[in-house]
Image (cartoon, rainbow, N blue to C red; front, side, top):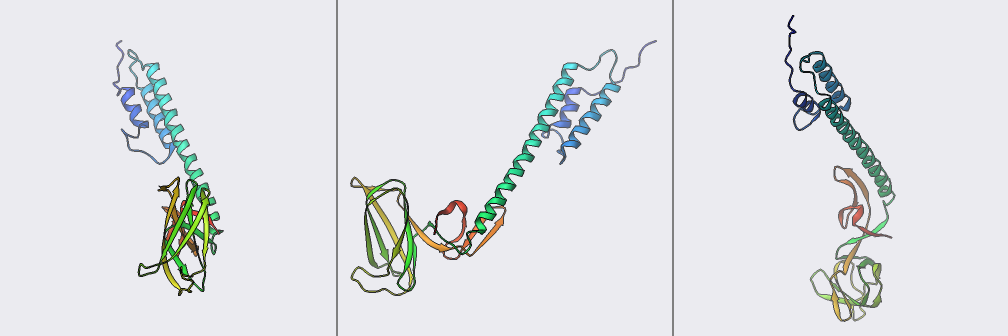
Length: 226
């Protein structure tokens, strides 16, 4: 008696589509992918043509691919968990900075009652550093000269006095930095402005420090906490 043959779709196409997100609609559950794969595999085995049974090598290959997909999904889950833990730790650290002064890249100085704080950041040592301070009208009012400065971040306190010794009024000033080494200008000298962290925000962009005088800053923007 002839054996009735049941035609089944090739294992390679059907099973690969079950686990390959580029060829099938992706599910949100790794377990759902696994269950679907096994259901299709069992169906294939039940309906296979006895005269042309499924290739064991193909089945083994598909099982290996399923294992890879499952492993990648588990890795992604682990990475998301680590990311969440890191963001939580960063949030706690940021919250601890509220009401603390910080230095971040900028050129503004706020003078109040004869005192102002700002800073500079040098990537390399400098023989001389000239800091030129100007008022809101752009007029030069003072020059601070430093010598033999090491690389790194350095906070600076200004007494609010002009070059001629006169006391300047409260308000906003700006400054520029020119550092030299061996007579050559160092292009990596950066000015730092001072601000106080008022609050912390969290969102898709990560943790942000709200500093009224500087705007929203990332943790990586902070050069020094004072």
